Image 1: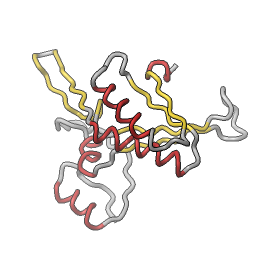
Image 2: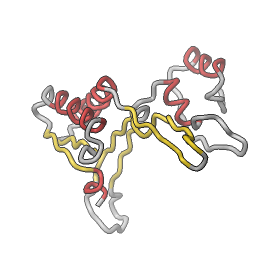
Image 3: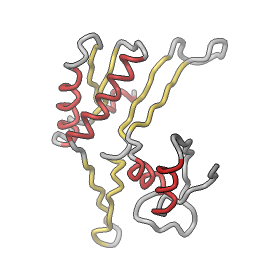
Length: 167
């Protein structure tokens, strides 16, 4: 059993791929002096192809909350978009971040969400986006998601702008 891996180490990543069928990954925190261009979390996701982050939020019976009956699953693409980790300083004090979205990864995460919904008897998949502003990137994501949605006619498909969803 390994307790700690260095995501920047080819040897550690190869051991994980070769010797283990599964792994549990907690959050890696940036340590003082960590000057790598990408966080350890982003590096691990990319090197191990951990593209789907799945979070199940639900109301616990008997626990008083503001809202009752919450049961939502969030499936987030973990390797592209804002998680591409492509940033650089253009000029001192001026930072540029590049958002990269591909059709292949958009279709892959959409298919994952629809397969999850199908396998878990969920009735709806909602694509959360910012296509009102990021017309090309998030527009590509929506095109890919609509394409995959057609393969799952028994699952309702919605779209919502991230600002509205957050509200």
